[in-house]
Image (cartoon, rainbow, N blue to C red):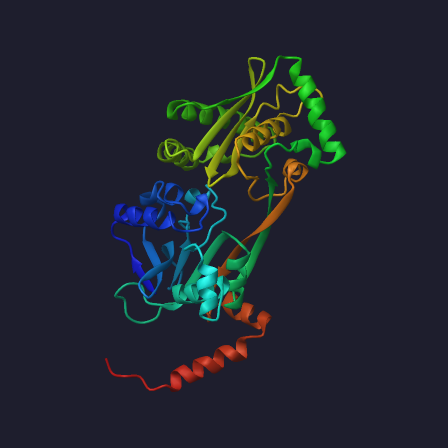
Length: 380
């Protein structure tokens, strides 16, 4: 295990790209996302590497932030700055080599065990050449069930869990057939109403330049919708918009960014901003023209419906709505996974003690501490 500060983000990017090609990660763990404006987001980057017999098994990038009254916090895949973290990472976690579960089983433990060992080391091991121990918390946002189970074993506090609905895409199978009668009725009625304006169609951004234009148009509709609810909207954060224009520049030519405009006749009724990753679609952001929608016209449902059918015909396997229980997501979804937000506090913090009491581990903790103190130390 190696936990070390990062001095060269460009060199890390090359190593990360090489490993991600052999890893079972999500788009949010790719260097397209992780490396986007990394100099702004990772002001004190720390890299965790797990190897066995020379083989790289896992990588993780943290940002280190000092804590009030001493100590530090490592943020997994995030900056620890609200302004920067508004881009909202999901499907986060350690980037693991494919086959890690099988390899772990050969050592008497599976993926969860390896994750627990790695994260325990991230909380306690010295960083680089530093000596001594520092109080250190870990923050893990938007991680899967395996990461959740691993850190709960270590005494983590579960902050929240959110559903992430998805649609399993099957080429040749009619999407509407798997929906409730009420949802089918609403979609068909909305399509008929929009067809009165002209044929419904999808336009995909054909160039990086057009993708930037679509994102700007999406932002206008997105902000208009949130302003009508008395809320600022995601694009009110200037870093959010800057990040995503930078992300388009990084990922469009790699085939990882897809921006769609849905039209009824010649009128745009909505825009979708999606990520494409290993035959999966991640529906990240959207903007719909609710102001121009007439009775029974549902721009959100209609845009996602057309996009789902387009991606299914193209051979994609899954349409992921990402975290949130919005009604349109649950209406269109065929299943869901759960994403978790957790904090792993150091043992002497109030949250750390509270969590250990909750899990019945306080006695075990102090027993281990007494044994460690009773063990003679070698003079340096």
